[in-house]
Image (cartoon, rainbow, N blue to C red):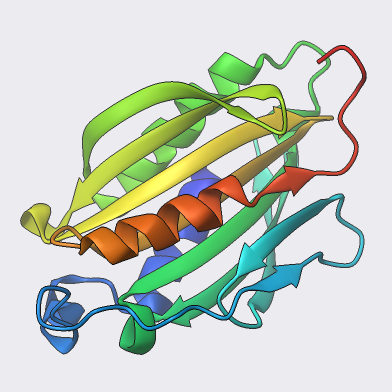
Length: 195
């Protein structure tokens, strides 16, 4: 899970969601404009997602104790327009490739990695369904409560999909609507029948 935490931490750093950037946007003083959602389907991946702009892609490989872990990260930095960052990561290899990898174990590792990588505090955690599959939603508070991460996790075919929105904790009701739309728009295109 170290790779996911590093990817998330890299995203946090490049997004500028740390305490020093919190002064850039006052979510109580501005309302989020209408969002122009774009359906995103990356080459070689079996999911779609609506994002508020064209994402920037990056990849990372990390040698782990159980083999090489591969991470793909897609991010839209909408801090100045919406007061949030939108990220989806796809992680595979290493422990994800183990034939006995359980979704709950993977979700626990992802949560713990995100907490360690952001030095955050767990606010809430609940089971959710993502494309009809059992997943998990985690909310993490960071930077002394100034910022938060809301993350949905789903594990399928030895890949962990992590759908993340990062915003100031004092987000407006409109930004919460945007977050719900974004998270709910994620669709896996190859879900086994009966799941």
